[in-house]
Length: 209
Image (cartoon, rainbow, N blue to C red; front, side, top):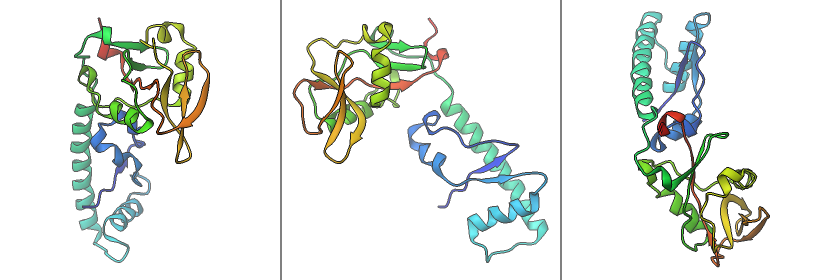
């Protein structure tokens, strides 16, 4: 089934991070904008995107089909808004560290020793607090977190060598951040003392005390 996002009234495509995981690929599709000033030509572009340029309808049929498309788009947007509405954190807030300046929520306790692939998998399968959008942080995000004493000091980093990041360097290496803030690339299959903390974007309404 072909999916063509339709933008109306100056709307823009959402940030994929704001969408549930199963619908994120939609954010990367080529959208068609419908405007008042170019309505006829915009509808033509929409039908070209759906059926190809050789398929043509009368103006009346185009208007009717466009109306149906707008109703369907409104229904889909309403559904997505319900899915993406911030839900209260359902876990123990003692299990997470909040970086309010960057709207990031960190898992307080790292994984066990693991290689790079295992680190990513441990975050993808993390369901802490009832959320499914945990991920492995980037090298930049971990370095920024190290510079925030209120965040870094609360992470349970005792006894580990370093933390994996999602930032890869070629096929065989990825960046690691150490407890002192230093960073370097290591083989992705290295496991000795290397662990993962997970991170996700959050809204303040999720963690109202």
